[in-house]
Image (tube, rainbow, N blue to C red; front, side, top):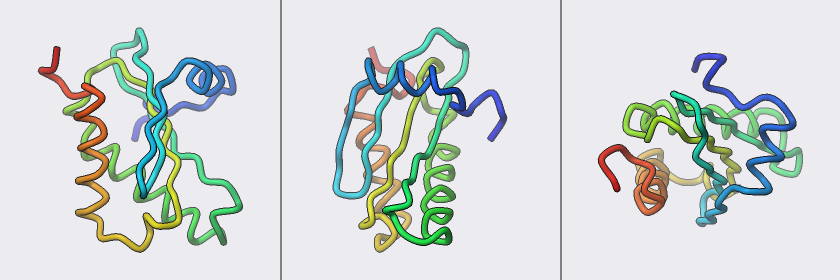
Length: 114
């Protein structure tokens, strides 16, 4: 993932938290908002309550792989923050991908949607 594709600054997160659309599933929560850039940006946020560092890092790796898999299909101007839930690490990767793509499809974030 390129540096320009990451959300890093506090202001970026606070704008997204205040004005973004929140979607909860059994496996994760996402907050998204369209932006005025030519590319999408992503961040995975995992608190210490999630567990040990190894579990948190695994959840972030899975989240980044989800974003990398759908990045080319996303509308070009979207900020997305991903919050994994504990149940995510017990699911198969295919089930997580299916759930993630379904949420993005319902949010009309894929190219070709009105």
